[in-house]
Amino acid sequence: MLSPASGTELTPEEDADLSRRFVESQRSLRTLRAAFEQSVSLLGLRNPSVSKGTFFYRAPDDVRIDYAQPQGDFFLLRGDRFHVAKGGNPPRIYAATDRSARVLVALRKVMGGRADAGAGMVRKVAREGNEYVVTLTPQTPSQETPEKIENRIDVASMALKKMTVKMPRGMSMEFSFSDPQRNVAIDEAVFQEP
Image (cartoon, rainbow, N blue to C red):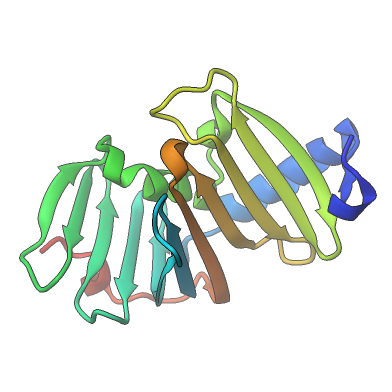
């Protein structure tokens, strides 16, 4: 059971209802455009690295992150291909199964309301004020899987507000989303492969 300071754990019935409503909401999502802030912490770094930009999703398999600084940097996850453009260099292409794509693949699963989004994880859900906090920890911990994933979901809109992924060896990555625009027209060029 969670302490009152960290929220109230949901009953199994409330958890099932939340899951159903969240999956319905996400499966009705065709596109999403949102501002984001990304914070990356690494062991040995005094302060986290913070970036901002625009997050795009198009059902069922396309995710793009455009960074405002440095301008021109982006990540594009399109089907089974993962494109990375950094530092003014030409984009590199990786398989979506590459470890560098893991966080975007997880985001894509959550955005699409996919049943396998929490596969292999133990799930705990609590309510903290106007947010549901869904915490996932691995059933079988390893150096290749996250130690913990925490998703914060707005109670009223069922929108994902924040995803925090803590990896082994002291690395963590957090995405915070604001100004989400659901099911809006997004220019095809956003998802065009370079």
